[in-house]
View 1: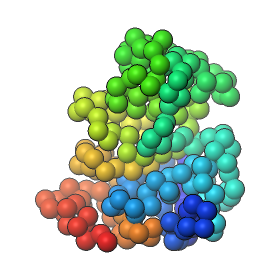
View 2: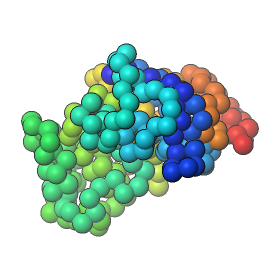
View 3: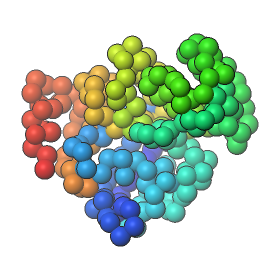
View 4: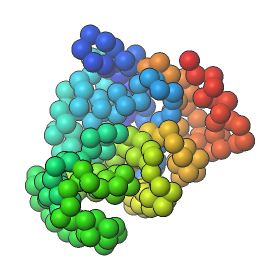
Length: 234
């Protein structure tokens, strides 16, 4: 799935956060979104995923403009979304989280078994409440929940923030495999940026709800380049 965001305006009530933001995510590629706190990164992800309405601009999927999609419609259109926070059903077990995510998507049961094979810890924790999982286990469950809808585009809002290195590496490897299989991925990154930049093609820099720069992710791996870009942000 190719996603194009054109001149997007969005926010909360009367407060506008995004001021004409553009973004492109190509099939089979990992696209990074970077920027300082308050840049509008999470607002952009929520708007693409149908959790916030756009007040202006277009969201285009494979050349066809879509507008006014709510979260369920966006999911059915092929957009998977892993929020930064509150991204699992905390008072449900791991097993029930996966089953609930699979309800509306026939054929997802096999993906649950695949998730268990890839991450045996989730099978071990199947009867445990999501609220009691470690950070890495919870993020793994959140991504698995999103993948049960077989999305063509996966949006990840800082999925590795605060995680132990072993879980960061596992998630990076997992997402790399998904992109190699043709999935489009948008990855909002704040912590561990170098690991994500190494596997991504393009980085979009946001600042104060606007596009600041778009560049090959490899450019930001040059010594001092990433720090320079972030220090220049307002």
